[in-house]
Every structure is written in C-alpha cells, then in structure tokens.
Image (tube, rainbow, N blue to C red):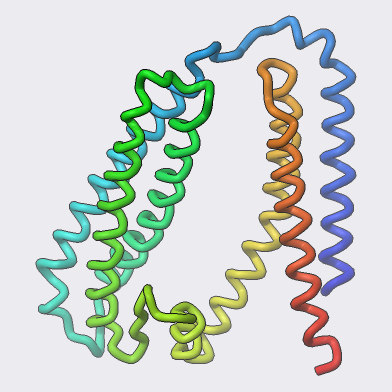
Amino acid sequence: MKMKKYKKFIIGLLISGLVGGILGGFSKRISKLDISFGENMSNLIFKVLFVISIIIITYLIVNIIYIKSNYRKVDLDNVPKVISRKVSNIILLCTIQSIIGLIGYAVVINKSFDKGLFYLIIVPTIFLIIAAFILMTTMKYSNYLNPNRKMYLFENGAEKKHFDKLDDGEKWVTYNCSYTTFNKMQSVYAIILVLIMVLSMFIDVPIVVSIMIGSIWIIQNLIYSFEARKYEDV
C-alpha cells in the first residue's frame, strides 16, 4: 500500500514538472497576452467573497430555521436522512464560511487593497460571528438527535472524544474518507502548483505562494509518514 502511494506521488510530481516545463518553454510567446485584473484585483476578490458569503449565510439561516422547526418532532430511533443531511451540510458550510472569513481578512489587510475601504474588515467579522452562532446552535440540535454521540466544541479533545463514541462501521467510514482525502489532495497540490505557474506568466504571483503550497504538500506527506511508522511494529 505504501509503495503504491509513493509511486502515484512520484508519477504525479513528474507529470506536474513536465507540464510546468512545457508551459515555461512557451512563456515568451504567451506572456504577451494580458489577462491581469489590474490594481483592483483585491477589490474584485473581496466582492466575490462577499457574494459567496451572502449565499452561504442565506442557506445556513434557511436550513437552521427548518431544523429548529422540526427536530423536536423526530423519532430519535429513526432520524430522517433529510434532517441528518441538513445538520451535516450546515456544519460543513459553517467551516467553509469561517475559511472564507479568514481569506476576507487577508484581502482587506493586504497592501494592494484600497485602504480607504479598510472599514470593510467588519464584513468578514459579521459573517464569522453569524457562522459561529449557527454552528453552535446546530451542534445543540445534533447532540439532541444523537444523544450517544454528543460533541462539545469547546471541550478539550472534542473531536477525538466524539470519534471514540462512533461504532466500528462509522469509524471505518471515517478512516476511508480520511485516506481518500489525503490521496486526492496529492493531485490537488500538483494541479494548483501548475496553475500558479500558468498564472505567473500573465500576472504578478508572489513566489511565496508556490513556496507555501509546496510546504503544505510536504508537511502533509511527512505527517502521514510519521503516523504510519507508529504502526510498523504493531
């Protein structure tokens, strides 16, 4: 299994390098094209994040109202899939909204952003507060629907304690999803680095972006390898 994983990793790395090299070879010809967004790129990104956040928050509010109106009527021995799925979707989207909020902070404090609009830092703050409130409310409903698998966000080791309460089937699903995520992220990092190479031909992309992506990729593989070694002698 480990040899197969490393084989895929090396092949993906070689393909990415080959594609990047080919694109680099044509860089002089295609560099004459200009698809840059100009000095207002940060402002454009902020507007896009704002629209996405509005859509997510609207979805969260509509669904939390639905859950609040129906969760007390549910038979705890047979929780409807529609309720469980909505709870899962809300938790996922609250996490995504939190990430978008942090990106919003990064955009607003960036030196390329219009400093006359610095007060807009309150926008991601509001979205983060709403997402946090909805997440805490959803966890309350989730604990009611799953009394044997309660999870408290601010408890030390909350995720591990929640994992320990899962049955063997649910743990297997978690393990499988975790490995699949790790495996697919190998390709994602390679694709992102190639896209950065392409973008750098048209717009000014700080070299630190490639370094950060590559560093995260390396760290992920190191963590996986170190964790795997713990079980080699078991």
